[in-house]
Length: 211
Image (cartoon, rainbow, N blue to C red; front, side):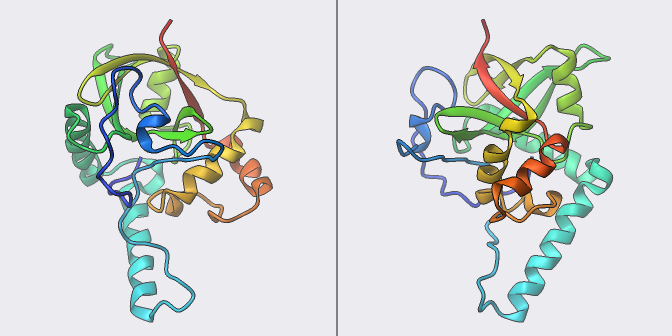
């Protein structure tokens, strides 16, 4: 989960059916596409100025500070509450969704702003901060049952995919997620075997219709 977007917001709203189908995010047949919440600040090109590089480094330090020790600080929690409300209302691009899961201790519904990734026609949620985060622990305790909200509500079951299948999803995720890169120890252009090496640390869930 990250805090700003690098993707154009002029997406078409999804038609009735599952939230964020492959077609609703301009998926190109035969190509993998992932959408994640990132940041408008791009990685510098080879001829970037020192000022641009310095800005990128400062931005990365800020992103790590928000989630120091893989725990959101007070500012990150406040921002996440705000984004969860915005995404649930459906006024953000349709790949920005709010995941609602029952708290494993309280039992009350807890909302998390997340970004849907679509890879080869399948929908995925990725935990860039690893397994020891609230939404992943709550989701596992709920046996994968949750709600997705984006202007409307979809009942879903999130199925954690096998470690050996995560590499391509993680690579596609980082290709479109500059906001996640400060938290992942692999370059976005690394070969798939590098992503396979860290796949155990980063849970990936396929979104299925609740049955």
